[in-house]
Amino acid sequence: MKRKHRIKVLKNRHFAFVFLLTSGTLLASVAASRNNDADSGTAKVEFENEQIRVLRVSLAPHQKSAVHSHPSRLGVTLASDKLRVYFPDGTTKTTTSAAHEYFWSEPVTHQVENISDTPMQNIEIELKQANAAGVEVRSASGESLAPGTAADPVAVEQEPHHHIVFENQYVLVLDVVVKPGETTLFHRHSLDNVAVQLSGATIQRQFPGQDWVTSPAKEGSVGFTAGTKIPYVHRLTNIGSTVFHVMDIEILP
View 1 (cartoon, rainbow, N blue to C red):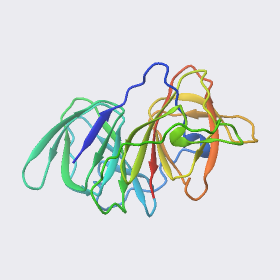
View 2 (tube, helix red, strand yellow):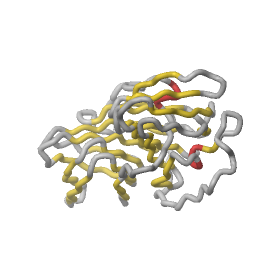
View 3 (cartoon, rainbow, N blue to C red):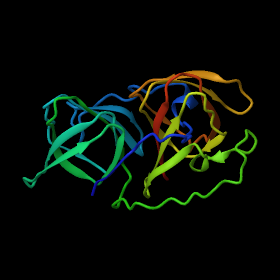
């Protein structure tokens, strides 16, 4: 079953960022593409460990992938697309997505054709250890009593600049937007997370007790931070003239 919701930037909403500013490094190609379930002709491995594999999936206009398989996965569309999907039983399905949408998909074997006149590109996070169908839950993080200071930060899902848009037993998806001139509260990340950058912007980040550091964000980039092993606290401010927009996928244990 596939769930898909459109993410829109709303006025006067404040968000905070998670990955690209914590490490200062974009994992543009951490692991090389290899011959396994993903179609090596259309999918590039951006990151891989024992828990997840992050793919950049691209199709040129009217290109068709080879038949391939995925485990359970969470995807983010970087561009609008119109696809025809072919299944082993001979059935097909046509889907249309806008840019910056997310979707959840159960394990599947399929062949995908881009039937539009524009390129298609997704970031897809495969959950290697998923052993049951995803069950969407309604998050109830509640209001934090912490003031969001360096000494008393809020949890990332309670930070008022973050908005939870999807959660099941495997992932927590946060839509993150920081407008020019806005600054987030100090907030804590305690889980591994993948950040998908949806716009280009110039951001400064700050860890408790340290100076602000400028970190430009590149549209379409993706990165991983091991927050479970090394939890971290930070805040950020948008010093540029463009909106900072990122999709943060927290990987649940």
